[in-house]
Every structure is written in structure tokens, then in C-alpha cells.
Length: 517
Image (cartoon, rainbow, N blue to C red; front, side, top):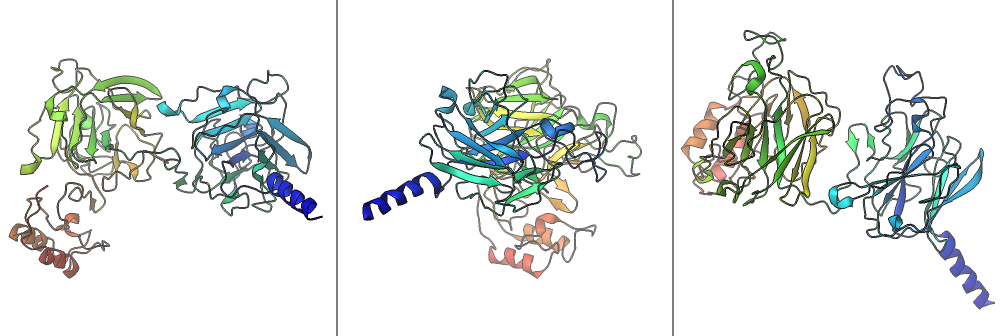
């Protein structure tokens, strides 16, 4: 009797109990019916007057048809012959089985897998070159190269998915409507995970929810102003260098439009280096080094517009690139002559190199390059062409529409925690700052910290002395709307947008301390 009980218990645990840590999880599915649009309405407007759409399919009837999305959590997982059990209250239960194909034999953590009824397979999958997406097609009319050749339903009728391994043991699920959330997914909605994917996600997680906007087939989920962070899963290495600003103002325009006398708001939007000129200084972009003593000789800068690679600029083997300090600002300009006087020990943290067809090629490829408002993006690669950072720019950072009278900039202090899709990237129509820290509103980037200076070293001299005291005295008792406001003096943490005794205390506590990077 005991043996029978023990055997039965083991079988139940093996075949029905979910693992403590999930190897693969459900991330999203589309419950939009074939005759509906995401969030209802028509092709031109949803029920809220917007244009809810999918990041891949755009706004189409059916939101891309029957599809669901998985995320691989465990690295180097073998999913050959795994089973995907589909159930709903309005359809017959169905199991799709992954084949024995080598595609499934060694999947990396952070891989996104979509199973679609209408979209042809895309198995170009290459994580080493930043392609983390696999799409396989399952329907009655295709050859079962990667998955069962069967149509399958995805709908709003308590649709659920269970994932089982080769031995038939449950890996994850059932998950979906009726588990979490208990109900509410309509035929104009998607179901998605509103959290970063990880091995602690369970099928009944409260982070699963229905949604009527921001469908993201084959890409990290987005909700409100948030996006899933896949970097921990993918073994992401913090960046050594980040994009800080670029100029999208076209040659015939001024910053914020208008003419030389006034911009479109009646002001005089300008750049701190170029002042107010047509084109705002021409084609240029700006980088910041966020890792100390960085060697970027031979690195490649791939430039894209509208998804097409326009140019690759390669940094030469010149010694200027061999030992860059954290906090260095690098500008790449088509029009401004080389300035490599770079001397951090004496307060010069800026390098400008000129790239155009008339150039010498001493520091960078002698080639013209575009910078524009057509989804301009940058990818930074090492000498072996491995991606180190990017793509970054318009179309990656969420909710940004860069015009030909705008700049694109980082509105945060540069550091190695800035992801390419950071919400701190934004378009702007004023306060362009070629070659110097970005400014926005009453704020200015703090580069002192990554340069190794004390926050109280206001002039970055290496000493906290009377000069720093005088700088603070000039901004004393000001707030961010006052003429003498200096955001560099708001050094007490947390910042309070007021220069007062708490900030002065920071200077007195570090008085006459020497700290040279």
C-alpha cells in the first residue's frame, strides 16, 4: 500500500506540479478576433480615438491573427519535442509539438519565441549578433519543420497554455485568462506580462493582465511608460559608451523652426557652441564615455535611417582613442574641425573629430554621414563587429517623434545603467549643447561623479576651495526659475531645486579636499 501511494505521489509531482523556477514562460498573446482591431473601432481610429497597434503588425484587423509569445528563462535550454497544450472554453483542446530540429537544441536565456498561424517562419536567430527572436508558423498547410503543422486558436474565451517538456512534465502553466487574470480579456485585447521576465514568474502572477494598447509581437512588452528589461536574462554587459545627443535639424531649418530672428515660439532657441544658425551645426552626434580608461581604437559606428544602414564610421588606431577617461564627451561632426587637445588632468574633457570626404582620416573614416529625423539610430561595434551598444535613437526610445527642427538628447546623468530604450531619451526644441553636458528645463547633466570629482567641486578643479564657494554664492537661495539658478550647485541629496544651507554644508564638509581623477 505504501509503495503504491509513494509511486502515485511521485507521478503526480512529476507530471502535474510546475517547477519551482520556470525554464520558459508565457509572455503575451493576442485575443483580438479576426474582425476586430486592437481596442476596437476602425482602421483609422480605436474606441478611444487613438490608433492602438502592434509594434510589428501595425494597426490591422485581427492584430496579426492567432499568435502567442514565449520567453526562454533558463540558458542553453533544449526544447526539442516539447509540447504546448492549448485550451479555451470555445474550442477543442490542441497540442502543438516542437520538432527535433536543431533550432530548439540550445536556446539562450532571453530568447523570444512567437508561434503564429499566418506569419512565415523566421529562424535567423543569432543571439551573438543581437537577434534574439524566433518565429515559427503553425497551420494546416505548411511542412512541420519546426512545429506541428496545425491551425490553432487564440481567443478571448479563457485561453490558456501549458508548456510541457520531452518527458511530459509541466514546465509552466496553465497560464492565461482564468488563471491570472481571472477574467476580462476581450476580443479587442491582448494578454501580456507586465513585469520583467525571470524565473520567479508563476502562471498565477498578478503581473499578467489584459490590455487594449501596445501590442508587441516578437519584442519586449510595453505598458504605460514601462518596457520589459531583458538585459539580466541576456547576460547584458553594461555599456562603456552611450549616445548623449544628436542634431536632427535640417540644413534649411533653425532649432525650433522660425528664422534667424525668432523661433516658432518667439524665442531664440540655439546651441551653446554654434549659437543660432541654420542647420544647428550640421550633421553631428555626441557620445559619453562611462567606463574609465577605455580603449576604443578600431571601433565601428554604424549609422541607420529608416532601418537602412547609411554609413559605417570607423575610429582609427590613433593613440587619442587608447585611454579615454570616464566622463569624456566625444562629438562626431561633418563641419567642425578636429579638436583633440583633450586633457582631463587640466579640465579638458571634450574630443571633436571631423568626418567627411575631404577629411584626413587621422582619427575617423573620411566620409560624410547623415544625421536626420528619419528614425536615426546608432549601433556601436568593436573591431570584430560585435555589437557593444545600440541600436539607440528615434524608434528605440519610447514615445519620441523627432522633427527636422529638433535635437535628440539624454535627459539624465550619463552612467552605465542607461539602456538604449531609456525613458530619459527625448526630443527637444531648445537648449542644444554640442560638446558639453545636456541641459533641459532647469537641469544640467552632472558629469562630475563619473569623472571622479566630488559633487562639491563645482568647477572640476580637483580642489574644493573659494572658487567653488563663489560659484555657490552666486546661486545662493535661487530656485530653478531664477536667473542666477545653477543646477550644478544643487548638490545635497536628494535634490530639492533650491540652493540653500544643505548644499553649502556639502562644500564645508569637503573643504580643501584634493581629488584629481
